[in-house]
Amino acid sequence: MEVVQKLDIESYAYDSEFDISSLTVSSGCDASMEQGFDISRGDFHFSSPIPKFTLTANSDDSSPEHVNERASRVENCISLRHRRSSPPYKKVRALRLFQSPATPKTLLEKCSDHTPATPAARSRLFSRFEKPKGVACAYPKLDKPSVNINPFTPNGMLLMSKKRTRSKRSLVGSPADGPDVQKFEVNDHEDSDSEVEQPTKRLALQDSNIPRYRKEFLEVRLIGTGEFGSVYECINRLDGCTYAVKKSIKPVAGSANEKTALNEVYAHAVLGQHHHVVRYYSAWAEDNHMIIQNEFCNGGSLAEAIEERQREKRPFTEPELRRLLLHVSEGLRYIHSMQLVHMDIKPGNIFISRDKRLYTLHDDSADDGFEEDDPVSTEEEITYKIGDLGHVTSVSNPQVEEGDCRYLPCEILQENFSHLAKADIFALGLTMYETAGGGPLPKNGEEWHNIREGKLKGLQQYSQDFNDLIKQMIHPHPEMRPSAVNLIQHRVLSPFGNQSKAQLRRELNAEKLKNEILAKQLENAEKCFKSLPANLIQQFSGNASDLAEGKRPVSARSWLTGKKVNRSHSTTNF
Ligand SMILES: Nc1ncnc2c1ncn2[C@@H]1O[C@H](COP(=O)(O)OP(=O)(O)OP(=O)(O)O)[C@@H](O)[C@H]1O
Ligand SMILES: [Mg+2]
Image 1 (cartoon, rainbow, N blue to C red):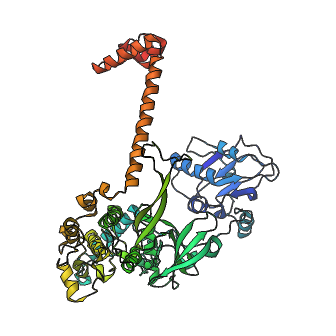
Image 2 (spheres, rainbow, N blue to C red):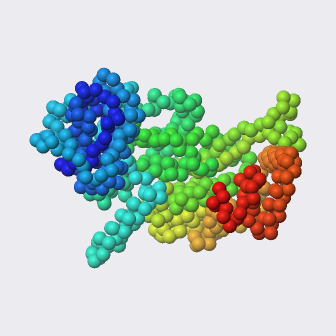
Image 3 (cartoon, rainbow, N blue to C red):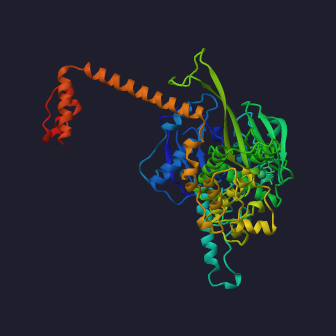
């Protein structure tokens, strides 16, 4: 064992009975301890009464930078607690590394017959380790690193592309293996231990079961059940807010569905931050079921809304449809900007949030604060959000699981994945068509093919512009379909056309308020300027005209001290 460095704790007050058993390792520093400073291997040595604390490690790198870095890690991880009179923990920060890389003779070296800690000594040492009280560890100790790599984050994507490059290289010269099928595997390399071939899925769900559902949530009702999961409306006992909690119907841990369930979690975690994507809060495994806590959308799904409108014979108006198209396009623009695609856009996966807002009816009021006598109106604000992210995949490394065939473009069926974002646009086009009363959509047959050839019956009650836009969105050639950005900028979706009177009034009031604040600030600045002594104002004006002429302005300090600075020696004057 090589002695790396010695820490000087001369300034550290303690008495002579201090021994190694009073070393306490703070929880959470296990990883660094394992890598660099394993007490169980006897890498720490302390012997009273000599006031020296010697730190050794098994690394060959004894450069001062390396040692300093590791010493500061240890400093952060270890608190030395004295049995009788504990010095303040901050005192440990006073530990100072000797500058010389040559380690002076230490007690350890003197005790050359020193042997690593015996099992008995180790157990004595670890029995003293303290865990934070009252926090039960939900995870058993895992042999493998227990953090998954989300394939949809930039880092995850980079890792996946590196893997692909490696697997491509390994295919060179082996044509018998066939073409390189670009797929990401969340379960891949499960058994590989090598540093390079780290698995992306490192945490076995079975090992991470946590009983949270009943403890943290009050189940209000079952909202509905899909192919994989049941969704419940739940109130979080702590924060009092309502959430949609999705539980897999069957246990997924260890099953083939684990990958699908994890895919939804990965996608939600990366995408659940946008106003037009259902928000994600957390996910965990419980009884081997996957549970996802999402934003609760109190208006249900668009599919339910379509049914309701049909029952009530109350079709969507064109401004309502434009609003829907604008919101979903904004959600898609965000998803596509992350190099991801949804791949299952349909009315059942678009959710509605209804917010009741109060507005004052005074058009001229500069703010939205309510005076007691102000007449108030309520208006419902509807927001559409993209949900159900179970089919999300990345553009660069697609693993396509076909969505609902009613909304599927031909090219995906033919496994042409070169325009994946446009498959979302196609599905959105047919979603709009169905919402506008063009449904039910065919699942197959001649009509299915007709639609994919661009033969779509016109919707008489809507404008030609709107009909044309939908036709463009389901164009047989994906390149010809508009992108999400094109849609948002399209004149049919001009944002002002979609805003209600109350919303426009609110925006006007906000702008008026901004104007008033700026005018007030300007007025104050003018007052302040006028109150300055005349000579300062003069210098100010001089400075301003200097600036206008491109001359260097007088410095603020010379201004205040009244000294004229010799510009050629300005630095020495200060
Ligand atoms: N965030 C949410 N807010 C409100 N209701 C939701 C939410 N998420 C899902 N639901 C509702 O819960 C029900 C089940 O949803 P889920 O996505 O599990 O099933 P599905 O879409 O019908 O089927 P699949 O599992 O094949 O996607 C649906 O009626 C859906 O409208
Ligand atoms: Mg769904």
